[in-house]
Length: 355
Image (cartoon, rainbow, N blue to C red; front, side, top):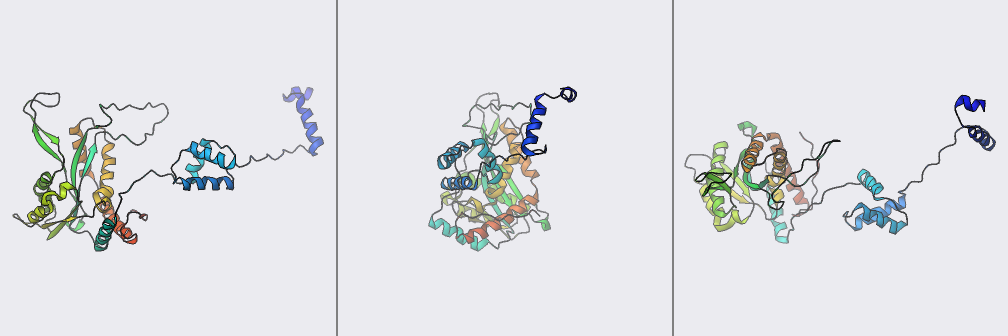
């Protein structure tokens, strides 16, 4: 009792020590019994089979229920989530255009013809919608920081602006950055009445759809002019575009090719090339430039269309030539992979190191 008071322990403490001495012959600590592993090889195999049978499309609760049905052991969805994120590869869902036999043959022919192309004096053009607010993605908020709620008049009709982009491969020998230009697809309108945005009679730009007439006007008045100003050393510049109705309707390629041969103030001859249908991966804009631009523009907070237009132009002006150069190298790699899969789009790009 005196020792218990001195050491500050209960009277039963010495009784437990005596029992342990009688049972084990010493007072050394016993080894802890390891908790049996929840995910045994049999359970891991069941998880793998379920994931393959459902192509990886399931919730963690569904995975837990399927494992219980298969093995009779209940493992929580949280435990399975931690295991999957640590050991498996979690990727976002992606879709690709469906290709028929004719389109695959066209892609294969295009890839074989240009897989060794250095892309000198070559321009890729395409259109892109830029949104005032991107309603997707996740936010990383520190503890105690409240999320700022974005208020929109409509989630379905978010204000947006269309731009026509023209991109070439950078040419350091001629001090050319590769940025031919980016232009808003819009028509001038005159305000009929005074509103909170415009005064009566004020002329402003209103977004327009890319029709054949609009495309021809922008190509001859903006794109061709910019190409001849920024690439005067070239004899012939080839402009690649997709086969959208606004690009190919009403004999637009024939008219533009004819206009491209007319060089009244000097400069290169311009020839148009239509890329295979359902093949956005063959255009540098869709392949990487537009996603990169969207990411940069969305990080800048804007509230008005005019501010969004200014930010798109600013991001285009600040776009670095090194990234453009890597995009053109990526296009070459895409063509090589297309040849390997006989024109299909089921290829997987090899990893490329940044130089």
